[in-house]
Length: 212
Image (tube, rainbow, N blue to C red; front, side, top):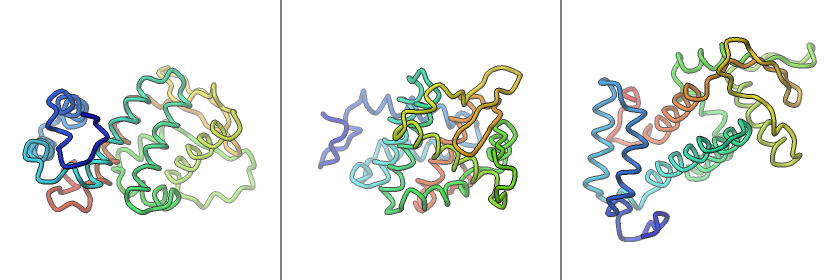
């Protein structure tokens, strides 16, 4: 069965595919306080109840697919590109524009997540007279958008370092910004995936977004 087929058969009637999905999402629900949410997800997968036919499942699948592609990518810029494509997909499936999604998405990131991103990815304007009224986390996502555009439209920034496992920050440029990064990929991935899940589940009656 093609795992993109959202017809009458459940995607999760394929045991191998179900195991792959469960294995992927288990990584993000290891803490005991998250167990209830994880069990609810498993319950939906086991009982189906039309779950395979709605946008929630499509979003669930898209997060997994693009994150797995990001993991396989050698270049940081491609990792960011796949995350951004994931954002575009979630926006489309919710009837939002890309800009609308990027504007609301930070609301689904925990304060600890925001603090980690801001502390470990310090952004400055090249032009010191630039208006700095925007929230730091909004600037972070604007920079990711600019990086995506540079890669796709201009073939630039392919060798930019975004993720840095060293103790010393690395400083580079994207568009009108300079940035210093000590951002660890695994931490970034966990923050973004959990925030994507918050976004997906936020309007679903079976989930309390505070549990994720």
